[in-house]
Structures are given as structure tokens and as C-alpha cells.
View 1: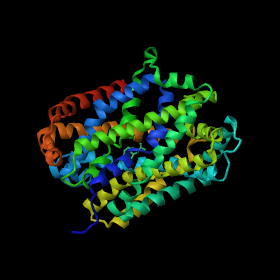
View 2 (view 1 turned 60 degrees about the horizontal axis):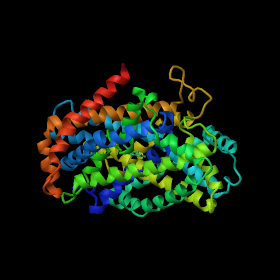
View 3 (view 1 turned 45 degrees about the vertical axis):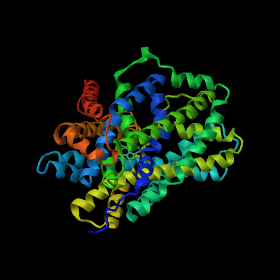
Length: 447
Ligand code: TRP
């Protein structure tokens, strides 16, 4: 046996899985997606999606991973060898490359904003000034490729060191620190002039503005935020010891991740409205709104850099979990050494990231794709960050619910969880509710 695979310690799994879940999905993607989808109604549909669709899939992924001890391709193959099910695993590995490619671009921008914050570039900044700063940063091709490369290298460095030495250590102290900073921001934002309009937009559902696209966006966001649908949680599950209580851990992870996203909205929307900005302005919202907020708060010169540093680290614990999927695949199925796998796969993802790095904002070919009328990065978020995850989650639910069968999954869950009171409810949700809803939502969005 090589120790290429490794495993988590007991608390290590919750920390690492929460580290995977909490990231740019909560602070960058959630607020702009709420803004683009009309506010309160989206938030309501999102919360329902988390509980009804995503949580059952989260338990299914972790259980499947722990039972087989394998990467997604290997996990499907271990239970149904020689069947096409392994293609769900391959879709996950491919999604891993693609999500990493655009995610590292935004993470790199976050790191860039840490440098801007710590060198005092937010001092005295106006709303217009912040917008010009963002555009200047994302439309500087050389800078974008540099920050992308730096972020991929950081990710590769940690993943090459393995599960407990690298991944676990990074998650331990940083999460509570990030949370502390968020509370400070929350207080500042809620006391801004005009905060109330932001809260109203965020919380008050406008049922008349309903569109089916709200549901597909909310469901995709739920999968993205909980790191579901491409086998991240199958892979992390494969490092989970048998004494771990899987359903309870899954519940905590979902609660924690959702709580952080909701708090992020309470920070961003009051600030957007108090600065007279458009909540539907798209994927740059967080970078446009926060510099002004930091400039307006006591100790903003300290809180600002700390926020962007901690967010970069939260993004790192997420990119690590994304890269880990293709790396575990290469180790298990191709017999590669962990280090070689991390460097080669990270290098390929970096090359795939170049169009995203060059395709943000509003001008140029990569930024205003004909036919799609959006930037390359936004298109990649739609395809790999929403659609492929929903398809992946659908197949994972069908696989665990109907092919592997829930009674076998429940037997696996009972190890470490003891007697499961809600096993029947979970089985019902996974077999009937999640897949039917995912399929219905996917079909209605195509029609
Ligand atoms: N959930 C992370 C975030 O919200 C991103 C992430 C990590 C992810 N692993 C994933 C998204 C797997 C989709 C699939 O920032």
C-alpha cells in the first residue's frame, strides 16, 4: 500500500468539507446570482433547494465515497463494474478541470484585491472609482494570467502534500476568523444609510416576477455552494473514517455553508443600495461594492486586507477540493504518483483558465461572446458551474437511490451514526424527490 491516498482525522472531515463548501460560491457567486434573479424570491427557492434537493445528495455522495474508498470513476466502477455508470464519474473529473479553470481566475482576483487593500488603494475611493479599479484589473490580460497562475500553483502545492498534511491543516483556524470578519462587515453594512432598501430587495419575495430560470439558477447555486454534482464529496467521503457520523456531519456542513451565504447577502445588498448601484450588475458586484464599504468603516484599512486574505484562503480550501477529484482519479485509476498528478493536472487547468482570465467585464471577443451575449467566464460558470453539476447530481441520486439502493447506503451510514431515525425519509427524498425535481427543472429550462 502506498500512502498516496491518505485519510482525514475525525474533526478533519467536517473542517475539510466545510472548507470545500465555503468559498467564492458564498461571497462572490451567491450575492450576484441573487441580484440577477430578482432578490427575495430567489433566496426562498435557494433555501428550499438546499434542504429538499441538495442535502439528500450530499449524504449520498459522502456515503458512496466512504463505502468504496474511491474517486468518482472508481466509486461507480466498484459498485457496478463494467457498466456505463463510470461515465458519471468521468463527467465529474472533466467538470473538475473546468470549474477549477474559472474558479482560480476569481480567486486570483481576490488575491489581487488583498494586495490593493493592504497597499491602501481603497482609501477615499468612490463608487465610480471602485468600478474603474475593477475594470482595470480584470481587463489587464497579463495581470489576470499571473494571478491565475499563482492561484493554481498554491492549490497544486497543497494538494501535492496530501490529504491530512496539506488539506486538513489549512481549514482549521481560518474558518472562525473569516466568520469574525463577516460579523464586523455585517454591522457596518446594516447601519448604512439606505440599508433598508437592500434588505427589502434581499428578503421580500416578489412572486409576480417569477420565471422558471429562477429555479434552475437556485438549484445550480445550491449544488455549486455545497460542492455537489461532480464527486468532490464522493472523493472527500473516501477519506472519511468509519467512526464518523455521516448524516450529522452533512447536516452541519449544509447549515454552515448556507448560513455564511445568507450573511454575505446581508453585507452586500445594503451596501449595493446605499451606493446606488444595480444589484443585477453581474459577476463583478462583490469587487465593486466592498472597497467603498471598507473605506467607510472604522479600521477599514485593517479589516479590508484581512477580509480579502481570508476569502483567498477560503477559496484555496475550495480549489484544493476541486483539484483533488481529478488527482484522486489519476492516483487510483492510472497509478500516478500524487505529486505528478497534482502538477500535471493543475498545469492543464491553468491553460484551460486562460480564456476565462481574458474573458471578463464587457469589451473584446472573449468578453462579449456572439450568440451568448456574455463573457467567456460567465458562460463557463453557466455550463460547468450550474448545468453539469445539476446533471451530475441527478445521476448520483439515481445511482445511489436505484442502482446501489438506499438500503445498502443506509447500512453504510449506520456505521458511525448508529440507529438512524430519518433513514426512511432520506431514502424517500433521494429516490423520489431530488431526482424528479432536478429532472423537471432541467427539462423546463430546456423547453
Ligand atoms: N463550494 C465551493 C464554493 O462555494 C466551490 C467548490 C468546491 C465546488 N468544490 C466544488 C463547486 C465542487 C462545485 C463542485 O466556493
